[in-house]
Image 1 (cartoon, rainbow, N blue to C red):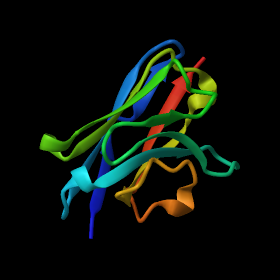
Image 2 (image 1 turned 90 degrees about the horizontal axis):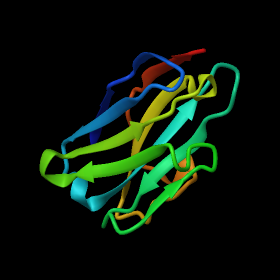
Image 3 (image 1 turned 45 degrees about the horizontal axis):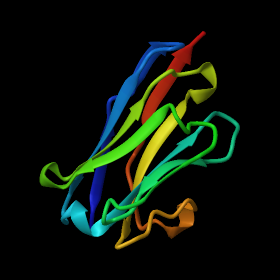
Image 4 (image 1 turned 30 degrees about the vertical axis):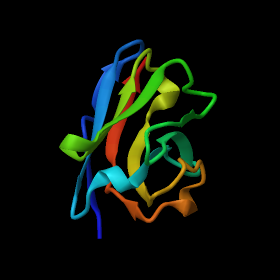
Length: 124
């Protein structure tokens, strides 16, 4: 079992930055691909970014490409999502997820473990 805990969310003005963290416990994160997803009120959960278990590959939704960066620090058993140039439409609950030896899937149903989410609110 892997337990994931997100942190770093909050309220920020448009154009600002936040860094989300996803701390893992229970298993070594180095064996897992990590994904970030988000869900805005009244909308479906959507893919944001992912990184393969080997950290060789990263993937981004078109809506965040060039603004968000996913990374991982296996020594700290933590994954990150650096979010720059935030827009009001980025407002959502952000979730991290882990996929055992995964390639960095963009589909949420490929992930085995999920965190509880952290709220990101971007004001205009």
